[in-house]
Length: 176
Figure (cartoon, rainbow, N blue to C red):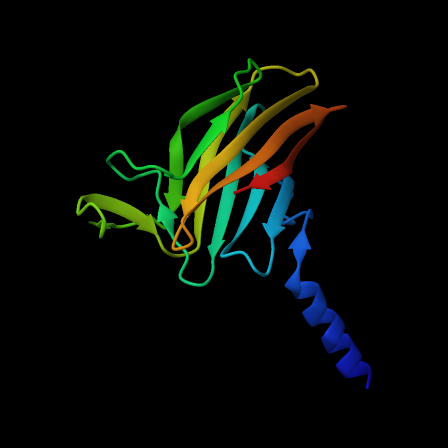
């Protein structure tokens, strides 16, 4: 009987998961996972320290139900391409472009017949950045992409902040 109750509790806890530390690596400073059973994807955000003032923003996309989206590596002018927008600020400076692992492969877009890179498997996007100030701050941004085949524009708003020397990333809202 105790085994059945334990199994039910474990299964219940696996169904809905949000707002928790997503990695026990000591270099992972802060993380948050956005996961809802009915959504075609799970998204987790992490900040990982590389050097004194250099960090990685890590975005892990876990796709479900044949979900896919256009990679930031796609050439061409696509609406809803996976992108990140940060508010103008003097605290965080982005370095280079997103890295993607595994790399998406170019294919032919079935709608406009041009080249496109669809992300069709669980993928990690990484953006390196530096922090140029030791004072407390809060900077907002969002990740935007169109999730297919549902064809909805997703916006995941978040903040990166430092308060009393502690760096943190938090999801604010998910809008469709």
